[in-house]
Image (cartoon, rainbow, N blue to C red; front, side):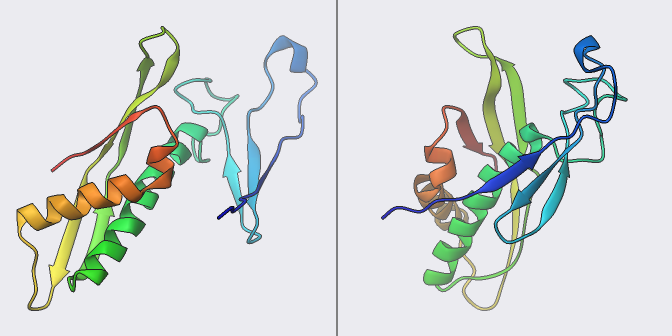
Length: 153
């Protein structure tokens, strides 16, 4: 099985001061379905006005992609197990710091899902943890990175 995924990242210089390092980091991501998302360097990495706080930054997108992948597998596992999920909200957090080699990286991603179940068949805490473990093992995004991914209770 082989799948390919594409995104077009486009940046255009809007200032005359590129070589002075005072250029805008604002750019766009366009995905294969046609949606375009405003993107920028994180304001925690590049100060305003050279970054755009309202735009998605690569660090946020990285954390969101891990969270989304985990959630989608969790939902699939829950459905196959006969559990009715009413809502799933994850306040995921990525921690950026120096790694063991001394390089700045997202060293940990903490997932903090809040899941509401409905119906007659409500899983207990052990079943929920088992579903999270299975979702983590199946999440190809988490399997593709060096960062530790932690599911917080």
